[in-house]
Structure formats: structure tokens, C-alpha cells
Length: 292
Picture (cartoon, rainbow, N blue to C red):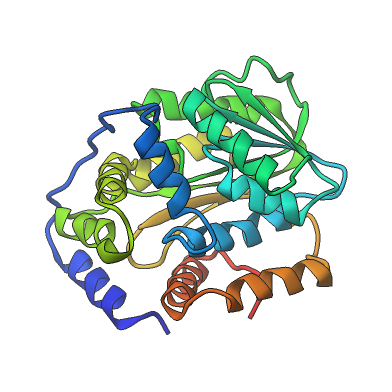
């Protein structure tokens, strides 16, 4: 059962008239050192983004296999990528980002964790010229695509994913979808303002405002990605949207044990966030392995 505060907010969102439209982020590439640090800290094991990263890790691990080459579009400080790479030491990962500051943070983060199966590259996710056609086994990206300036850029990214991904390859693209009201955007941006610095809350607010509408995702997915997987959004309110390929393997027991340990080690409010996301995505058609 979803938590009551979130349910209450979502019912208000459903009943309200639309008053929010997409506003591209003021800084499309995050180069400010304070912003990068804030984002990195929010994605640590004790950060407010940790439940989202764990949920996405479960989804991504289903669509990659040992021996794969996997590309992460917009890897940022590699919190998400590092978690998945650590769970899959027999997979080769390529993290691509346009921010030198982010890549520097990612390099330090991976080194500190002793992760050696990741190669970092500076690049534009709408122009993957460093990758050949049908050259990678899987593509992932988590909460990055809203940084793109416009619909044309989003569709170019989808087209590049279509070009570089092998037939039958793994796919997991997930991001915010645009909420209908400013009230809902403010609620989620400041939901944990006591547990996050103001600079992160402002970035989160800008990210939610910059999220693409669900129908934009539907048009881009239909044109470029429908042969690789299905499109899902969270039930009742499209707070998040995901394009995911069919599972390419059953998660091995040692990995499930690790994922369970991550979940059980989170404080109760983070477990609630994880459960809410899993529930609303499940009712939207995106199921995930039971890790608890």
C-alpha cells in the first residue's frame, strides 16, 4: 500500500487543473562544483536519492548479462553506475557525460570504491559518434533525459540508442515525466528539505519542471524504441516514465541477497520511498523482482 502523504498528493494532482508546462533547466550541463557535490551526496547510500537508485538497479540488472558491454548515458558522478557495476563485475560499462566536473567526480567515486569495470567518456548523449552501429549489448540511463533542451534533442538521443543497440539488446531508460501542477512539483522537490541542502532542492525543482510530457515520451518511443521494449509510467500520475526491454536473465541468488541487504540497510523513510515507487510502477505495468 502506498504511503498516505504521497497518495494524498497524487489524488490532488488528478483532481486539479493543469497549470504547469515544461521549462528547460537553466543550466543544461552541470559544471558548478557545489551542484555536482550536492548531487553526488544525494545519491550516496545515505542520500535522499538512494531508494530510486536501488529500484533502478534492480530493473537494470534484469536487462544486462555477464559479458555484455553496457552504455550509461549521462552517468554523472557514477552513483547509480557504480552500484550496478559493483553488482555486475563481469560486465563492461561505459559511462558517458558532457560535464567534465561530473566525470571528475565519477572517476574519484569509482576509484574510492575499487570499481575497475567502468570506462568514462566525455560525450553528448544525442550524438554517440564514438560508438558504432549495433555495437553495444545494453543501454541505460537514469533520470538524465530531462536535461536535454528540447523534444528534438530527446528524439535524437532515442535515435542514437536505436542505432548503437544490438538487436534484442537490453534497454532501461527512466526519467521524470512532467507533473500537471506546480503544487505537486513543489511537494516532491521539497519533500525532504530537512534531509537535503537547498541547492539540491532547487536542482530537483528545476528537474521536475524540465521533465518531458508523457505524450512526448510516447511519440519518441514509438518512432525509435518500441522494437526493443515497452513504455511504462507510474500509475494514476505519470511521475516517472520508463522504457524497458524484456528481462534477459533471472537475477542470481547472490545478487538478490546483496540487493536485499541494501534495502534492509536503508532507514524506514527510504524503504517507504522504494515501496511507493515499486507499487506505482507495478500498477503501471512495470514489475520488478521481489527483493524483500
